[in-house]
Image (cartoon, rainbow, N blue to C red; front, side, top):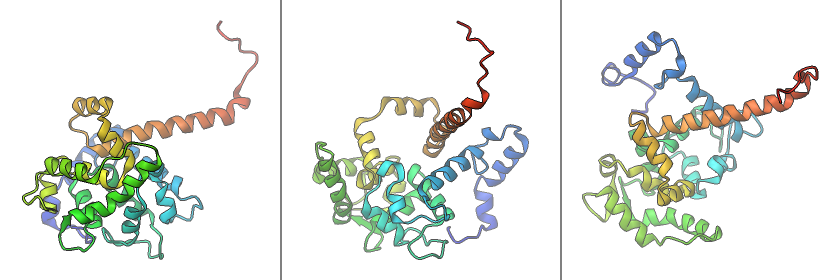
Length: 260
């Protein structure tokens, strides 16, 4: 419920107890994906550290704009920093702390989860009246359109996009979208990507066959699980390469001949 408390009823309805038991029984912590995954923590922390250039454990708008290779629009970042989807815990004006970033990255990388849908719904619902209208969607999409033109990509008109989104979500009333509409559709995350994440919008348009195959092979994994695994491998390889380049002069032994 986002109030910092967990009731007994919520605890019973959730899967936290089961996850605790699994973490207690499983010897390899890397196999535990729910809540206690070191792999997931490592990815979140490294992502935060990459953006936090002055390493004061706070990031501002300009830092967040660099997230995902400048994937997000300025308009959506402004909404995040207006603290509409969630109040920051950092208590520093114009700065997001680590806990705030955790909520952001989980929402950004797994838009199929209910907390994520609620997070982004609040961002797009500019007048906070509980529905997302055509004008609100167009406001965010305008920046996407401009970015496509700047990158010399063929722009996709908003009218065409709106028709696609209505077909995907199937709202009760085609003139607006409610949170209930979005929670009833498995494709709601794509709507948000279309509105403010250009990289994911382009990936959605091209339908990467590799990612589709991944989803079919591991249907139990969430979008977050897949993202975290890909990033963990990438970050680990970068770290290994850095270690190798830093230590290559020390460990090289000329007495060892090459086997060829």
